[in-house]
Amino acid sequence: MKKIIVVLTVLGLLFVPIFAVQAQTNGETVYINLGFAPDPVYVSSSDYIVLRHGWGACTLGFVKLYLSAVHTEVTINGELVSVADGKDPYWGEITKTPDAYWVPNCIAGNQNTASSVYWNYPLGTLTTGEYVVHFYYWLDHKIVDGGDLDGDDYLDFYEGTLNDRYFTIIVE
Image (tube, rainbow, N blue to C red):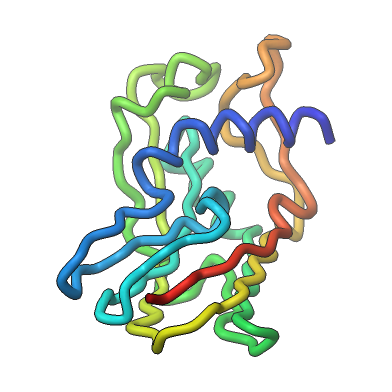
């Protein structure tokens, strides 16, 4: 359990400045990373909102393994918005990620290039108000990502609940 917390914290520190909220004005697209968005998230009623989360691993095969295990539920104000698995159409293509901060922690693969995948759910625009988002995210079987983020010289394993959090979107 401690290993998962360390890994998620490290991943959060990487992705927060990049993906947490790319707030833009004048009706632009705003990406809200479900796992790392601040609480609260402020957006404009003219902004087009896309909910997202993703995964990176040391090889394309490990990303495919992740997609075979992942499940996501998103509710807003108690209403179910999406239930997804790794076959959901909102998953993008697996892409090469050569500059990911965690590539040096790869002990499987070529240690120079990793791969990643993102789930992007187009929520659209919301009317002025507050929206409580619940993000519940789990794996139905144990997987590896090919890395050693905890520094113990062994592959890191992941299973069970990866994230179960609430945060608020405030639309102005």
